[in-house]
Length: 323
Ligand code: DON
Image 1: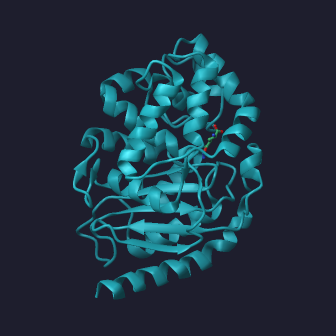
Image 2: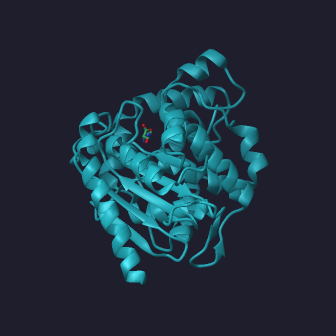
C-alpha cells in the first residue's frame, strides 16, 4: 500500500516536472554571481516529504546548490530562537517593500528606524550581524550548528560560490555601509558580509529544503523525530514573512496562484511549508508537507521560473493553498 502510494505520487511529480521543465526559458541563471551564472539552467527537481518522513522526489534531485536567500528565513528563526522574537522585531520590521531584494531605495528614501523586513538584503545582513557570538566566525558557527540540528547532518559551504559572491558583492557592501551608518549592524561591514555570504553559500539538496519546510509547516516541530526545535510563535511569524515577502515582488501572485508559504533563492531553490489541511477534499498531503524545489533559471524577481510554474500546478491539483 505504502509502496503504491509512493509510486503514484512520484509518478505524478515526474509528469509535472516534465510539463514545467520548458518554463526555464522564462528565466536565466543568476549572472551577477559568476559561479551561479554558469550552472545548467535547464535542471528542474522537486522533493516533498510527508509527516511520516516519506520522501517523494522527481526530476533533478541529486544536484547540490546553495541556500542563497532561503537562508534569510532560517537566520531569522535562529536569531529569534536564541534572543526571542521581541528582540528581533525591535530591530527588523515585517513589512514588504515593493522594491528589489537588494535595493537601497527604501532605506535611503524612508530612512526607517529599522530595515523593512528580514528577507531583503538590508534586513538579512542586519540579522546576520546580530547572531549570538563574539565575532563573525562564532556567529556563523551558531547558525550552522542550528541548521545541522534541524537537518540531522553536517553542512558545508560551497567555497567557489562564496568566493564568487565575495568578489562581486559591491551592492551588498554599499548596503552594509548604509546599515553601519544607521547603527543597525553589530559588527564591522566586512564581518557582517562574511556571515551573510557564508550563509548564502551553504550547500543543500531539495531533500534538505523539504525537511526544513516540513518543520516550519509543523510550527517548529519535527513530526518524524518528535523534536520541537523552535516555538510556534517564531514559526508563525516566519510563515507570515514567507507569504508576504518570501518570493519578493512576486509574493502577491505566488500567494494567489500557489498559496504556500515559501522562500526562494537566486540559486533557484524554493522551500515550501504546507501546513496540515484536514478538511481538504483531495487525497494527497492532507496532513501537510515540506517542499524543496530546484530550478536555477530565475525570473526578474529572483525566483525559479520553472519551479514557480510547477508549484502553481501542484498546488492547484492537490489543493495545497492555505487560503
Ligand atoms: O545577496 C545576494 O544577492 C544573494 N546572495 C542572495 C539573493 C537571493 O537569493 C535573492 N533571492 N531570490
